[in-house]
Length: 110
Length: 115
Picture 1: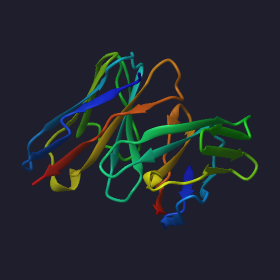
Picture 2 (picture 1 turned 45 degrees about the horizontal axis):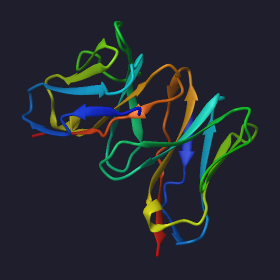
Picture 3 (picture 1 turned 90 degrees about the vertical axis):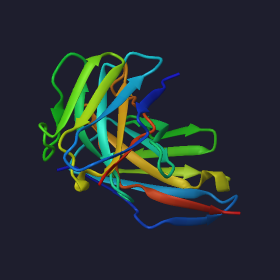
């Protein structure tokens, strides 16, 4: 069955630094992969989508890479701010559905 | 655009009763809606996928007789938790997609507590 792995340990970084989050998946080949932000007690908010034929996608301070050979996506936030503190979920798309990783909690300290 | 609402945002019910949660797409027509549940500090687990006018497709291990899903229109899907028990207490979130299957928009979630 599909397996999606995100670092379960919280990532603590200093304001202004670049945060890098990792998403690894096994046992399938998603055509798309999405990243979401989730704040406590709230539904996920869509951030970026990247297709399998795209190596990299950018949106403002966000950058996503998608390596279908390594079966990995990296999510970067540059010039991080305390307001970026949240849990970030990756969701590879397969068989008309998205399956979510467990998320990585990012803490940006001022 | 692409706003999804859920109602209620939280509900407390007694064991054995049924609870209905509504999911609405406010500014677009949702051909497909998804229902997820999330336990504390865990990921979203897909429960079922519903298409307007047809029966929902449930994920393995999800009891369809316990979690009744109705997708009556292109803007409304409901999840009814029947004969709720304390172990059904969770955060239930819906999402909706329109013309593009790979774009989905999430509701704010419903916190269900069964006492």
